[in-house]
Length: 183
Image 1: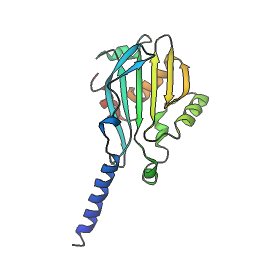
Image 2: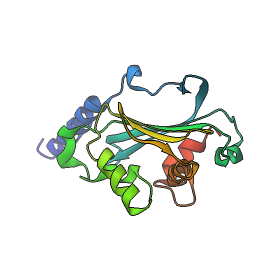
Image 3: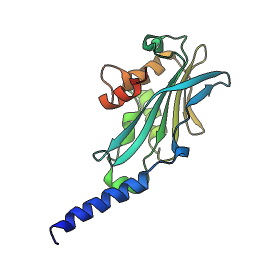
Image 4: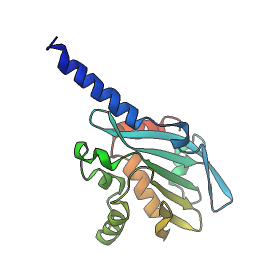
């Protein structure tokens, strides 16, 4: 009986963690988003980033575009595109999760830009949403819920975020594969 106690305890902990972190359909990102009230982009890929061997969801990232399966068009300035990050991290799990997990949300940028975005992203937690969107002739905007830390960034900022997630050295190969699976 005593030998099975650790197994039961571990199983109960896993089930409890999964129940606390389970998503409802309302938690899922939308199938499409609208840029500036006129351009509709559809979700082309999505991935979930986890910690602790997949037991804790940190965030879900979705890639939106209207280019269909043409990945080469994602890099073009005339192509509207967006990344949406739905934060799943809950502060009550903080002792069990890397304290600086949110740093991986920001690509490598100039020191002032990096510091600005790090400050904007540092307090994100469930149910926060980060939207990085690029509209031709308008530039890149970054929204963290209702806040707008960047309103008129260049196309290169959007490419930096794309390169961070789906480039040669992404945050995670698993996330990259999932984001590009439908493209």
